[in-house]
Length: 186
Image (tube, rainbow, N blue to C red; front, side, top):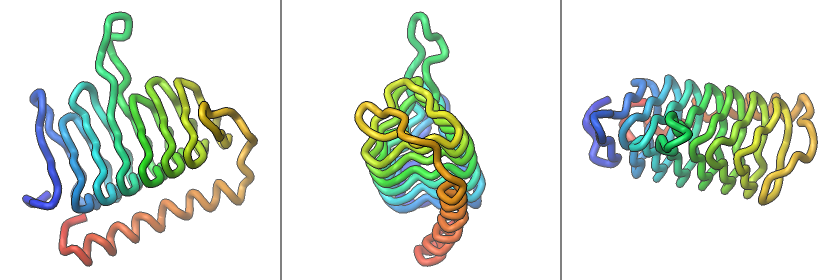
């Protein structure tokens, strides 16, 4: 990636961000440390992704929308691996979400303003609703969870899952359009 002054990319503890050349990183983003961002991912305006105490992996075509914070949890006695944040391919993360020390499998969905906390896991096509808080629990494949703390509501139907998958492709195209409009790589 070429030198940009509208974002912060910083190494810490000997680890530097690794960002695929096709990823779109919007102005105002702060990406620190042991962070890997895959092909055609889009990291939208004013996101913070901090891999300073563990690693953060963001898969291909995943989008992390405006103002979201992604962090990880450090190793501790009794939990020497800590909680890295592992985000799969084709994941949708809504505006102003907090994603911390968790695993989001391919095609997972995190709604606007939702919080996913240490040790939580969202399986493929699982959805955490807007404003919900997942506290160390596991959302099964194709399930919708709501509330604070989040609880199972129902299984998603095929049309909801298809809509989420369509939205992933839309974000890839939108990221390319923003990159072109801003004159940046991605």
